[in-house]
Image 1: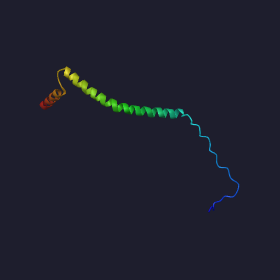
Image 2: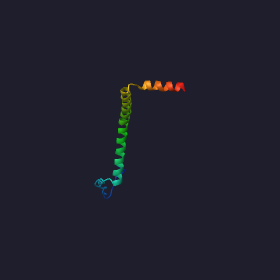
Image 3: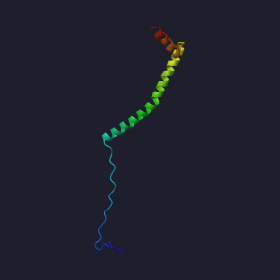
Image 4: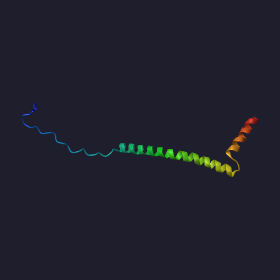
Length: 86
Protein backbone atom coordinates (compact mmCIF):
# COMPACT_ATOMS: atom_id res chain seq x y z
CA UNK A 1 0.00 0.00 0.00
CA UNK A 2 2.54 2.57 1.02
CA UNK A 3 5.58 2.02 -1.09
CA UNK A 4 6.94 5.46 -0.34
CA UNK A 5 7.38 4.79 3.34
CA UNK A 6 10.24 6.77 4.75
CA UNK A 7 11.90 4.92 7.51
CA UNK A 8 14.52 7.07 9.04
CA UNK A 9 14.94 10.10 11.20
CA UNK A 10 12.42 12.79 10.49
CA UNK A 11 13.82 15.89 8.93
CA UNK A 12 12.65 19.27 10.06
CA UNK A 13 10.50 21.04 7.55
CA UNK A 14 11.39 24.49 6.36
CA UNK A 15 10.08 27.15 8.71
CA UNK A 16 8.17 30.06 7.33
CA UNK A 17 10.07 33.28 7.47
CA UNK A 18 8.46 36.42 8.77
CA UNK A 19 7.03 38.53 5.96
CA UNK A 20 9.53 40.97 4.58
CA UNK A 21 9.18 44.55 5.70
CA UNK A 22 7.53 46.82 3.21
CA UNK A 23 10.25 49.20 2.21
CA UNK A 24 9.53 52.85 1.70
CA UNK A 25 9.62 54.11 -1.82
CA UNK A 26 12.80 55.89 -2.78
CA UNK A 27 12.74 59.51 -3.84
CA UNK A 28 12.90 58.44 -7.50
CA UNK A 29 9.92 56.12 -7.10
CA UNK A 30 7.97 58.86 -5.32
CA UNK A 31 8.81 61.30 -8.11
CA UNK A 32 7.68 58.76 -10.71
CA UNK A 33 4.38 58.23 -8.88
CA UNK A 34 3.78 61.99 -8.64
CA UNK A 35 4.50 62.41 -12.34
CA UNK A 36 2.19 59.53 -13.25
CA UNK A 37 -0.63 61.03 -11.14
CA UNK A 38 -0.03 64.46 -12.66
CA UNK A 39 -0.19 63.06 -16.19
CA UNK A 40 -3.52 61.40 -15.44
CA UNK A 41 -4.87 64.62 -13.92
CA UNK A 42 -3.74 66.66 -16.90
CA UNK A 43 -5.33 64.17 -19.28
CA UNK A 44 -8.67 64.31 -17.45
CA UNK A 45 -8.57 68.10 -17.28
CA UNK A 46 -7.75 68.23 -20.99
CA UNK A 47 -10.78 66.14 -21.90
CA UNK A 48 -12.99 68.44 -19.82
CA UNK A 49 -11.48 71.87 -20.39
CA UNK A 50 -10.75 71.80 -24.13
CA UNK A 51 -14.42 71.40 -25.16
CA UNK A 52 -15.43 74.02 -22.58
CA UNK A 53 -12.85 76.47 -23.98
CA UNK A 54 -13.94 75.83 -27.57
CA UNK A 55 -17.62 76.30 -26.73
CA UNK A 56 -16.76 79.41 -24.69
CA UNK A 57 -14.86 80.93 -27.62
CA UNK A 58 -17.78 80.23 -29.95
CA UNK A 59 -20.24 81.75 -27.47
CA UNK A 60 -17.98 84.81 -27.00
CA UNK A 61 -17.78 85.26 -30.79
CA UNK A 62 -21.57 85.01 -31.15
CA UNK A 63 -22.19 87.48 -28.32
CA UNK A 64 -19.52 89.88 -29.59
CA UNK A 65 -20.86 89.87 -33.14
CA UNK A 66 -24.46 90.23 -31.90
CA UNK A 67 -23.39 93.25 -29.87
CA UNK A 68 -21.94 94.75 -33.06
CA UNK A 69 -25.17 94.03 -34.93
CA UNK A 70 -23.90 91.31 -37.25
CA UNK A 71 -23.50 87.53 -37.38
CA UNK A 72 -20.95 85.04 -38.63
CA UNK A 73 -23.18 84.26 -41.61
CA UNK A 74 -23.26 87.93 -42.61
CA UNK A 75 -19.49 88.16 -42.34
CA UNK A 76 -19.07 85.05 -44.51
CA UNK A 77 -21.44 86.51 -47.13
CA UNK A 78 -19.40 89.73 -47.16
CA UNK A 79 -16.15 87.79 -47.60
CA UNK A 80 -17.69 85.76 -50.45
CA UNK A 81 -18.89 88.99 -52.11
CA UNK A 82 -15.40 90.48 -51.89
CA UNK A 83 -13.86 87.30 -53.35
CA UNK A 84 -16.46 87.23 -56.16
CA UNK A 85 -15.57 90.77 -57.24
CA UNK A 86 -11.87 89.92 -57.54
